[in-house]
Length: 209
Ligand SMILES: N[C@@H](CCC(=O)N[C@@H](CS)C(=O)NCC(=O)O)C(=O)O
Image (tube, rainbow, N blue to C red; front, side, top):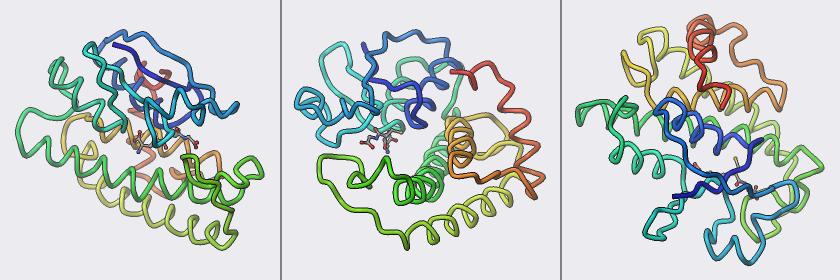
């Protein structure tokens, strides 16, 4: 098994955090996004979406999407559980992970990629050079705030995103909070439940992965 990875990027980070929580050591293949190695013909043959992380399984299957990778590894290595031990807990973990991805990580990326000169003509992952749309910066900031307000409500009622226990949804949220810092959003400001949660999850050794 091998993980196609890039140390600086938020999505590979949440998979590395998952591996650290599980105490799994999988060899890494670095794909340097700063040098656009994700758009090389060799990597596009592995993942036509041009994104990391990608897991190569022992039978040569390539699995993209952090959630799919971690669900696969959870089934192979159920302990310690990071998707819950019941169908209900697993569904809530997948639900909150998808919310973090589509409303959190994607909204931060919308701001960053429409704002930063480094993403000119590369606003969306993949080989098509879409141009930046400055109006999406303002909209993206509003989406980011709306997302963290929703998270604040959930964490005011539950110790972790999907309920009582730490799950992959929390690891994804940690990546989203830190990623928001890239566009100068301090998500924990004025959100006491999120700040308390962050204090606990960010001090786990896996956060350094
Ligand atoms: N939904 C995907 C998102 C993967 C993704 O967007 N990865 C970024 C790094 S965080 C990437 O590879 N970007 C390549 C690019 O921008 O060209 C996942 O959960 O793995």
